[in-house]
Image 1: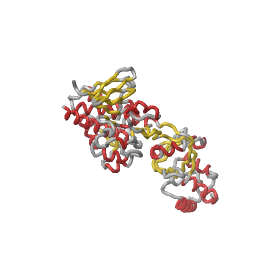
Image 2: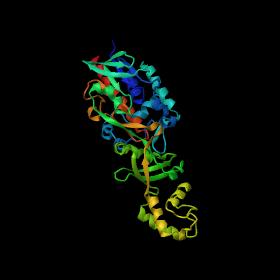
Image 3: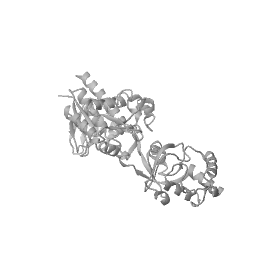
Image 4: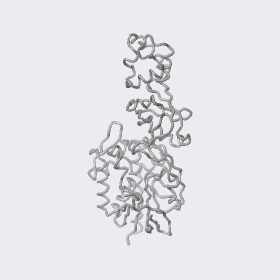
Length: 412
């Protein structure tokens, strides 16, 4: 009888592990179990249906700095399989990737179906047995083998198991893994947007600013980048990064805190005050509402003038010092109250999962249970938005596959 590998989870990490172990060691029987009816569902909707495969960064240290949790872990694993390996792996199989201005990488087809079709074709080529509606309720390690109990009562034995079922939003959802003896870091949301009840702000929905600086007072959390105002509050890359780095801290605050936005990050209050003094002379006869000197969207500029209680019909020369000082404060340190969060489309991930202290980053094997492996988001690793989470999925899935394939050959 062939030795059996069971991969739990039909997402990016699970598929990458399954197809690679089957390819590298045909002597192993590979079974992939997916609890739902859908395979690669997150791949399907990622990047607005285009699939943000990775990020165009070939420096391991720099890449690892984009993981709020697990940075040191991925720094070691990236030495085994990195961005360039991902690009080459897909290229060999006829899938070319392109890089956009912000570094995100997509298939040249701009369709996630290209990635899905590639992985499904690999599974078929190497005889991976794919089963849907196959939820695992329990894993037990018995001597040299594992026994898995499925939700339908069926028992399945395996010589190697790779758990790649993604993250869970609630701690209780990890219960089926308790039998493996691993420590679970409690999950909290990451990559979410901020709900802000200020109607005057949310009336600006659709307004975006290319570069702002946002910080959370009383913490070290601060990020810069593009911001989008929505009908519920604040979104965009700068907010998503802030939520990722502050995932645990913001959860402890029960998502009630303030944010301070600098709409003109090239200035601080002192330098901005000097600039506006020059503006009063250079554009003395022009209305302050006519055209702002910072290139901000007009609706936002009108909002900030109103916040500063500045009469928009005034000329720059006639703007009272009190209103000018208020405008400086609102431009450089506009404070908003956050009351809750909203899931950001498909990019929602969880911080938390299997403790990294119990996983070998060079093999993805459990340090507690021999021949038990992990891949993807089930581990306490999460990256910011931009292709980092998928790269971790490919890396960890490949490493687990290679370790299992090598070990299977030694047994033969």
